[in-house]
Every structure is written in structure tokens, then in C-alpha cells.
Amino acid sequence: MISPVPVIAIDGPSASGKGTVAKLVAQKLGFHYLDSGSIYRTIAYTSHQQNISWNNEIMLIKILEKAVLSFKNDQILLNGKDVSEAIRTEEAGRGASEVAVHKKLRAAILGFQRDFEKSPGLVSEGRDMASVVFPHACMKIFLTASTQIRAERRYKQLISKGNSVNMDSVLDEIILRDERDLKREISPLLKTEDAIEIDTDTLSISDAVDKITHLYSLKSQTS
Image 1 (cartoon, rainbow, N blue to C red):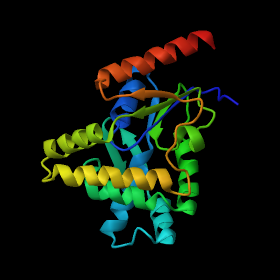
Image 2 (image 1 turned 60 degrees about the vertical axis):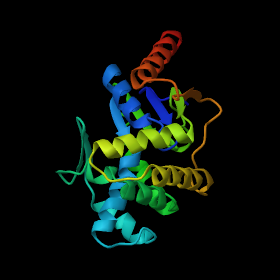
Image 3 (image 1 turned 90 degrees about the vertical axis):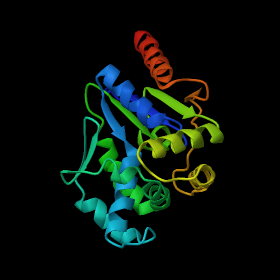
Image 4 (image 1 turned 180 degrees about the horizontal axis):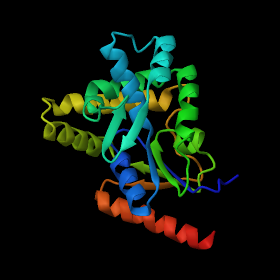
């Protein structure tokens, strides 16, 4: 069943560009935006700050219950505090991938994610947006790129923010995250049968944004 509120669900592996692309598509269409990965990153970051293990599902759920998370312009606010940069580290990303395997935690997050489905529309991005969170989305996109290209993008992003990183270690982490995301028992990363796959190896961010908004425009005209 298609929701009366248009939802564009964008999935893809780590560093495929889906976060930036989804945000710009939302801005271009005047839609709300959901960065689902930031929820897991925030939980991982907060648990680390409180010396709570990423394996402690009960405590992770308690962190979620106390968290007030919001998106404002380019900021991610946790209880009113800007954590945008803090949750974009490689450590927070690794933690997000590890806490995401917990079944009860994912179930608790599901309702929070679906609260973003509001008029005039929503662009959501993650790894299970089309398969689990918004299976009724009017458009499903699977954004991908080669492992090497994704590692290069992540490396440049981290270097630009002043992080001291090694290209080989970034590549290794991308490979490990792909393996965790693809093989986890609960909500693994996958391309749904009705999703449109877009390979961004040779596409710029603006090209990818234009392609998705064009596809959405065509779909809107025929629906």
C-alpha cells in the first residue's frame, strides 16, 4: 500500500554518497529528511562517552529512550547539542555498524524513524529504508559504488576534517562494514526487487541528485 505522503527511500553501502545525495534531493523537493544512520551513530557515540559496551542492548535502548534527536539545517542535535562532527568519526561509524545488529534496539528505533513521514514528503536514507522502514515508499533507490571508490571518498572526507587516517585502514574498515551490514541477521543491507540501482562510480553528487529528482518527477506525472 502506497502512503499518501510521498516517501523516497534511498539505501546503499557505507560511503556510497547516499547521505549527501538524500539531503540535497530533500532540499530540492522541499521534503523532510531522515538520516537513519545518524541515529545508530549517536547511540554508539553516546554509549562510548558513557563507557557502555556496544554489546549491551538493554543499556543502548535506555540511551535511545532518553535521546531527543533532531535535524536542523546541516546540524544533528542530541538533546539540543550539536553532535554533527562527533558522530562522523570512523569510531562512531564502526560503533553504528555494531549496535545495528541488535534486534530489540532496531525495533525501538523503527517508530522514531517512521515519525518523520510527514507532508509534503520525506527522503530517507540508510540500509533498510526500502526493505523494512518504508516498504510502501513510492520510490526506492539503491545507491552504490565500488569498494575502492567508496574508500577513497571516505578517506578524503576524513582528511578534509583534520583526521589522521591511513588509506589502507579506511579501505579495510569499509570492507568490514560491508560484511557486517550484508550478513547481519536483522535487516541486512539489500537491494529490493523494486528499487532502482544507481552506480555513482562515475557520477558527481549533483548528477546523482538530478537523476533521482528527474525519476521522481516522471513518476509523479504518471501516478
